[in-house]
Image 1 (cartoon, protein in one colour):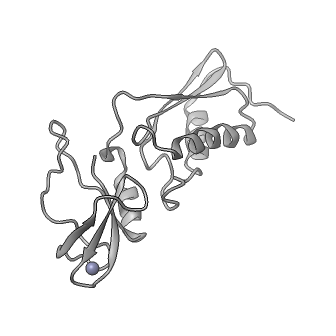
Image 2 (cartoon, helix red, strand yellow):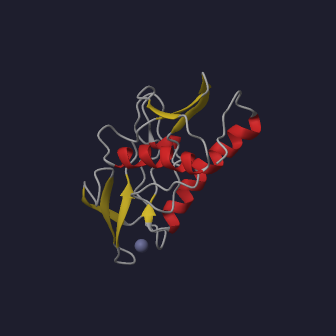
Length: 170
Ligand SMILES: [Zn+2]
């Protein structure tokens, strides 16, 4: 077995690492990978140890433990043995860390994506209603502050009469 002992982190290696990381899906939203989700803060090499810093989506998110061990085992399967995953809380993750592509995928998956936040107030810039991911109507109403997970809420579309989830902006 050939171990990938890293002496330095070249651009190509870093790119490869990100490629491997992008194969890991968010356990709660399987259409989005963790790179698109914006939780990978940094990939560094420190004394031969590959350090992956991640920013949890929100404190106490149970999916983080699963993601952490998935990162280690996925990199090990690509022969990167010396790996540590560091949890970074500052700056805190906000839904703005999510790539535009990820928001698009959420919508196609039937979840209304989070809105862009005002950097200072952390309140969504647009106060318009949450758009229905199925028909695009703004004629929607909040049904429940909590959906299948704490980071989502339930909405009802009065136009196409569908219940859908909205990934809260925070
Ligand atoms: Zn609708």
